[in-house]
Structures are given as structure tokens and as C-alpha cells.
Image (cartoon, rainbow, N blue to C red):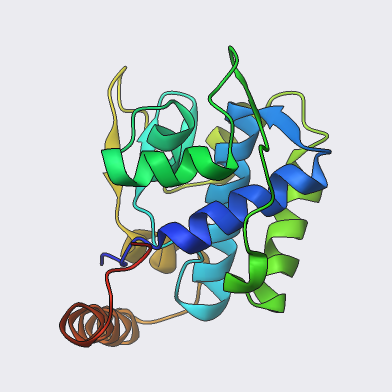
Length: 187
């Protein structure tokens, strides 16, 4: 299962989380908050907020493109858009430059991002928590390994394989329709 990455929603989500943190937060916490919010959305709505790909890293699961953007290593056009709103990293910290349009996010998505923020912000070791309580995470032995959203659905929902396959087909159809008839996501 592969969702379509949405740059506008990703920037809006990152900006929203940064605003909740007073404008500055560690990259580690921000990427974990985005992952957890996407995971909660997948569990509830069978879709993610950002459309980003999930990966296991030694420090736990992440959203891949957003993490690359935070490090200043994203695709050129997306990186330029990111830097319109988010300052280049300073060590392991990231800060808001200007608030992006959060109108790309629904109220339910903002609530989910807020829940992720409240859960993760006070943690002293978010990676250990994710290692323990996120069964989709597998130690990639110093590398990275993609996490299929179908695996997450199997682990955290009561959905049957047939129901998950139907969701996968819906996602493929939606991706096809967007690619065929809509502007590129987050362009």
C-alpha cells in the first residue's frame, strides 16, 4: 500500500506541531510526532495525513520524505517549499520560519496531530517507547526498512485481510484518479 505524498499537508502538519511547541523542537520529536499522527490516522480513517512512506530506522519508525526535508536532504522542489516555512536545521533542532496554511488540514487531523504532540513532547526517550509499543518497527541493523501500511493495519486494527486488500485497492484507485485528473500533490 502506498499513499500519495502531500507536500501541502506535510508542511501544514509540521508547522502546526511546531506552533504547538512554541516554534522550535528537536528533529527527532517532530519526525516521531508526524509518524505517530499518521499511524493514528491510518488506524482510524485507513488513510494517513501526509501520505508519506513509513520506514524503520534504528531510532524507530519515521515518515521518510518529511525526515529528509528536516535534514535539508529532500527533493529539490519540495525542499525549497519546506524552507519557505521551516528554517534549516540548527544541529538537531528545527524551527518555524512562518506559519504555513493549516487550512489543508481538517479539524480531525489537527486533533490527531495535537494528540500526537501531547503524547510525545514530554517523553525523554521516544525511540525506546516506539521500539517497545510499535510492533511494525523492525531493527534495520543500522540501515532502513520500509514499513508497509498494510502491516500497520494488520497489527493495530481488527480488519481482515480482505478488508485491508479492499482499502489498498481504494488507495490505488484514488492515486490513479489524482494523477490523471488533478494537479500533482503538494506541487
